[in-house]
Amino acid sequence: MPKVGATVFKNVISVSANGANTGAMFYQTHPFTVLQDAYVIDLIDKSKASDMAYLYLVGALQKSIRFNFSWTNKAGWERIKGEKITLPVDKNGLLAFDYMEAYIKELEAERIKELEAYLVATGLNDYVLSAEEAKVLDNFKNGNSMWGEFSIGELFKVTTSKKRFDANKVTIQEKGYPYIARTSLNNGVRGYIKEDTKYLNEANTISFGQDTATMFYQEEQYFTGDKIKILTPEFDEFDEIIAQFFITSMSKSFSTFTWGSSSYNMKIINSQKIRIFAYPDGQPDYERMHVLIRSLEKLVIKGVVEWKNKQIKATRDVVNSD
Image (cartoon, one colour):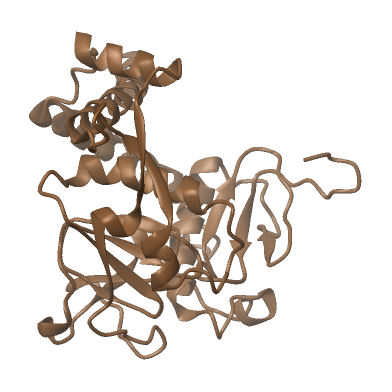
């Protein structure tokens, strides 16, 4: 986007003021600008605030503000500026930025240890591509993959959620079953609620936000808010990895639609065409889909492992220098 005529920000907190993600906040370390329905907030005195302290602030803001607003009660500045947040202070009552920074650093160190243990336990620390993975990935990159076109309704049963729970009436909790809304964040999970389990939707399905076309694989049973359709696979090979292939293909297919389009009804979802890997006889090639996603996952993991190793080395260097 051209910078001419735009107000460019950096090292501030961005806030989404509208839509399903109203109240979502992020600390922005690179130059950016805001468009309609978003704004930025910043500390009045930021002279003592590091990047780590800002991350702490975002966490505190999200906890106090994020879910107090909704589609019909948008998180505009005039509404949120009076909200109270809880922050650590020193003995003089001033913001304890040193504590915030130390807390985030300690949290990061803990997560790195957990990540290292997880990668080892799951075997994901081995990110070397097999010969088959390398071949499938190479064919995909070079446009040599064999594809087929199918309607979503040929492969999935599209249904309405068993019961729609109003976002303004549910009680969001830390435990319970996932509450899936039309947010694009956190796998569609707005929080957790406790309701009658007879209204739970099936696990191992894809949730589809009708006016946002946000799609997520749902590993466990879940409740939903308004305008969520359930895509249940009609084939046995479906799992979390295969789901990522389908979600990518569906997202691309729906990318030509306008946000909020009334076209996202059940009839259109069922008839929408998607492209997936196929055999020469035209049947879906689920095995090759699995191999491609696994190879892409390994490429991502390689970057994560290399970052993790650098972080661990940096931490050890600091400890040893003491």
